[in-house]
Image (cartoon, rainbow, N blue to C red; front, side, top):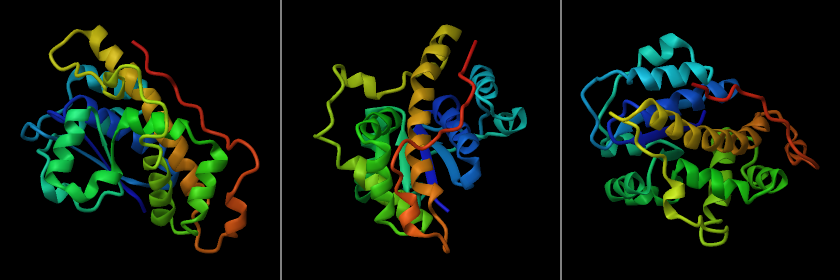
Length: 224
């Protein structure tokens, strides 16, 4: 099954929240989702505010409470099919560690923005080119999204591709950070759900190209 890595600075706020939300919202596909920090603390838990936001987003309390931070190393970047960073600076640091991962590394908001420029049919056609293997389909969709770089409209403010860091800041800042992150998570879920829904060794490949919109599961929005 596919592997996803999320990256922020300390691995106690943004990247573990993204990890937990992605794992919960892609649960039907059983992905492997992990996280790490470019300046990760040693085995630190998520902040209480980040835990509260995770629970509000549908994550089990025990899953949020069990998180422990780790420092990003080159080894962590060898196997993920997709790497989602929280900012452009994190993306740069990832690519400096592992230049070969450029086309599979995005800020999470960048990926959602680029994926939004592709219709469900566009994404399904890309997935179809990967056959019925889940990893191949996910990578085909990732390539289609990456191809939108330089083609899809750029954000008016480059910082709109970033998720702000709430660490040691107010609850309102945590809420603002989550409000930036959650729609991006849902954008990832949309693209990967389209890719993975047709993955089956015995599936008829023609059935995974939809003629209309694919339904998405609804999730609770993060609230205070």
